[in-house]
Length: 213
Ligand SMILES: [Zn+2]
Ligand SMILES: [Zn+2]
Image 1 (cartoon, rainbow, N blue to C red):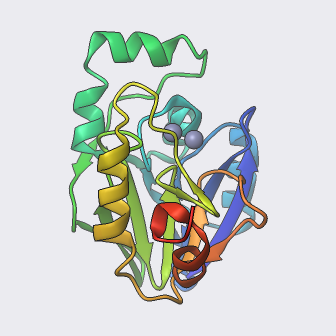
Image 2 (image 1 turned 30 degrees about the vertical axis):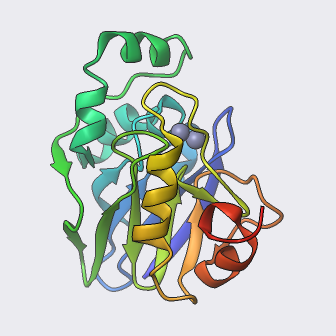
């Protein structure tokens, strides 16, 4: 599996492109601005994008959905709980005020344990509510794309609408900590001392995953 990490947009969010080396079928995780850079990579690597997957509904992670969908015809995929959450008028207005390009509605809603296939590769959805009700982590071949649920040395904020601290800690303890220690973590923001980590390292050093505060 090819993994490309791109740091994009005003908020310097990480977008990921995962591709099957053989068939060139691919997915984009969190197209977060600078869409032309994503499209250039797609052209350069001769990729066919099947899915646009959002780790959660916050506009800094979804603002590139519209353009990438228009160009690639890929399906937009996100967890049902975030799609429902965005129907709440107060939440919608809060996030619209941030001024990002709004995302079209999801084409397919996903749930914990769902699998998606592209070429000879597959990924599995892990529902990790807390940063938002429908936050997910995406597991693919020993790699975990954590969105804003888990950062290197930290975790996502819980003070935005839909956030809840206890729920986040439970998600990380029950769904993420049990993964193998050598699982590579690919976060949604560059808030740590490196741009990637492992479950083992975070269990030792990250208080949100059982390390000392
Ligand atoms: Zn977020
Ligand atoms: Zn974010």
